[in-house]
Length: 213
Length: 213
DNA sequence: CTATTAGTAGACTGATCGGTCTAGTTTTGG
DNA sequence: CCAAAACTAGACCGATCAGTCTACTAATAG
Image (cartoon, rainbow over all chains, first blue to last red; front, side, top):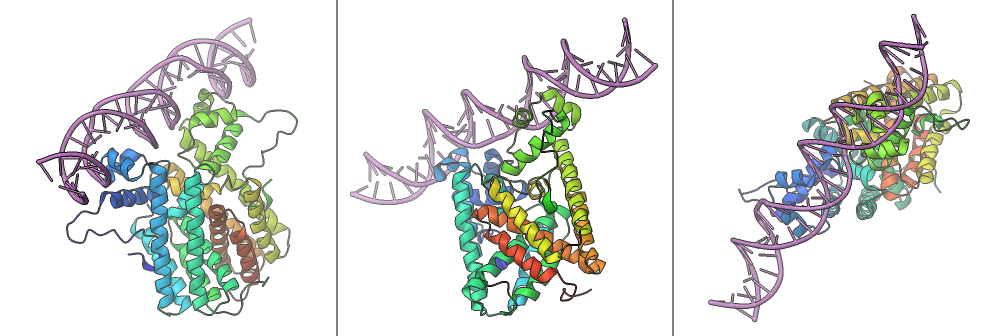
């Protein structure tokens, strides 16, 4: 349900009335979950197909460029989700500190829920694809820009200047993402808890900030 | 040369006097670089062997458990490097803020130097191996504990209580690591620069801190 | 009803995967 | 000098890889 950027993936996780989601969506969702679990290269197309209960022909019909096309589509979908959730969060003028803390808590909850079996999609894809998969790398640049922008909008909403907002957006993203990695490595939400506390403490009021340019 | 934890990998990057490093070390080094570039699953043993100029038999002689054994050894080597560098940094009682900033700068330098073609080993392995490679997952837990401990020692040296030191260690690690991922995704050192500035600003003096337990 | 397009279905392919195995070579130590 | 151990060497294996291709069915539209 994409609670506050959470990274859960597209809202289409539910099969509302027994009806099956379209093949294309099922492929994207299966891809996301499997890649979040074990990485891009380790997940074979056969496994994705099986998880999505789709035949091979459908994959190359919907995604003529194959696996990498699937990755690009997954990145775009998740980006939309995250941006939407962040703008929604900016709308509900809740306390910023609480919001940041909640983001960390949501991520920790997700990790625990999946028994640390899934990780953040962008991070996984970044480290596997950047040097040798140009399409995926380009999609990740776009995603990064969009998500950082949406995060910055949130800070602007709470009274930060655009410059500081962008810096804080980078920082919040980095800290949350890094804490997810540490948490997964150590199988403990300790790092995420600490990250939430710290971000809430230092990024919630437009004063202290960092060096201005 | 492992400047302040940098993540560069073992000190054995040099071939001091024309003499070739032992096969085992060459295998570990080749593994590290290739995995940092493209990930664990994407790198085949054949490629590692070629990069290390070693025959297949040597790999399974030195690492009977094969690729995963290589990963475990690489993790152990890198952990030692990082812990050593951090304890060294703790010894030279330099300004803590400067030190943190320098760590971020060193990482940014490394990313740029490699044209964003290499990423942090632990992060890459964490997201590819945690759910289905028990040996690697265990090695990562140990590595995480050791590195966080060494980082905490650094903070203790600078006057923080052990509790706060550990929290700050987690936070510094998370922020630096996450900033590396963002930087690589966006192919820009922006996130790392901001991370360095912020850590130096908020983690260098034993006062503000977070909620105590 | 028919022609066209969208989508499903899965057999098949050459390449590559990690790992095993046998044989040779080099080093060690008694 | 010689036997055991350490190490190098690479042919070989079944499994699996991403992607192609042909055949078929379902939906659309004129």
